[in-house]
Length: 121
Length: 106
Image (cartoon, rainbow over all chains, first blue to last red; front, side, top):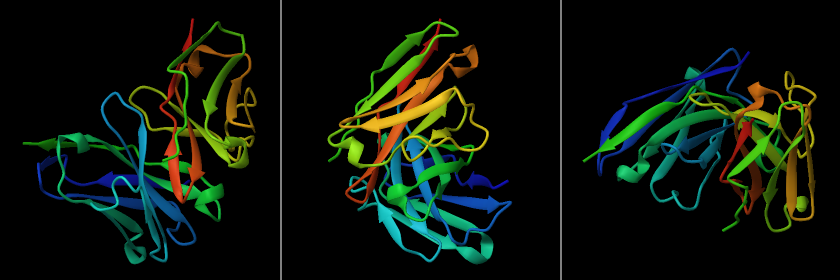
């Protein structure tokens, strides 16, 4: 059974860069797309972006200028960096696996437990 | 940008059928999927590619998608189905989520 685990600082200062890592276990990171999603407290889900194991990426246009997703297949990990954070970026951040050959026809079939990141002033 | 609209809340009596809708322009031309999220937990995929159920999801969960509306139907709703439900679709190379529907089993 594939498992995903997010890790990283739970507190980030405003204007700094948020950095999170997702470690995949119980399966290979290869052959799949991997995604980051966030959920502000009491709010809905927001897709941040995804990366193919070969490194191809795609981002939410509303966040694209501040987001970078990368992958390290040797460590079975992929990572999220979000720059210039503000209080509006306070959220639970989830990593997830994309089922399917293409994101357009796929779905998020395995999710991490999520990690709360608070942006402080 | 593409938008998916869900009703904020739906109520259903135990044993009855719950229907949760998700509306978007020409949504029927895209694949829709649905996630269930219980308080304090991560979302769980319950329907993908409009109508398919992942392994382990009960048969009482079903989906449809036509025109501008995708629908998640829960037959014989149980108390444990009480949760937030989110639809998701792909448009212009981005994933979009609906705002979520809170299902209350009264």
